[in-house]
Amino acid sequence: MFAELTPELLLMLFLAGLLAGSIDAIAGGGGMIALPALLFAGLSPAEALATNKLQGSFGTFSASLYFIRRGWVDLRRVRWMIGSTFVGAALGTLLVQQLDPGILTSVIPLLLILIALYFLFSPQVGEEDVQRRIGELAFALTVGFGVGFYDGFFGPGTGSFFAIAFVSLLGFGLTKATAHTKVLNLTSNLASLLFFIAGGQVVWSLGLVMALGQLLGGRLGASLVVLKGSRLIRPLVVTICVLMSLKLLLG
Image (cartoon, one colour):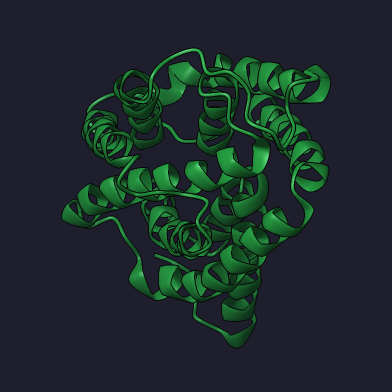
């Protein structure tokens, strides 16, 4: 059972949602803030994961809407990515309820460190689009489905994995990659949330308080991405990946 809903607890959850939404919109990794806050509030691990999907959906929605309205994402062009990501996340959420995802904890920190090194040292990661390596449909069926499945099954680093794929495979600049990442992250969040709701794991009272902060934080983070571009995204992606790796390694 979660802790008593005191004004102090509600304020803490709101601020955690605000900060998580801002960071998530810029570089991903907002779950590092949101999940500990939900566990601190007394939720079980399953309830914390489910409620995190609820509050996180508001932040990714806010950021996605900002990018779409400003023309960074054309929903018609990414419909296959959205569909594949949704299916992958739904299957991953169903599977995680049957299997123990703990086996992934030894692999994910290494992947996040490699992503951090890529963004830190690659001279190609900037604002300008470069030559793509695969087509958008192939990207949807492989990266969209695969990372979506991973997000439904486990989760940490999803935004970073999407971002690196958009940059390295489709040749997107960092701002454009971040914008598309938010749309696919929203898709995987919603797919997972639907199945968590069906399982009765979502704690609505706490999730909706954090969601208010996420709405504001997602909008703030997205606007900073557009204003600052790679000058802000690049160092934050590196920092978030390293911190997430350390958290996963150290427990």
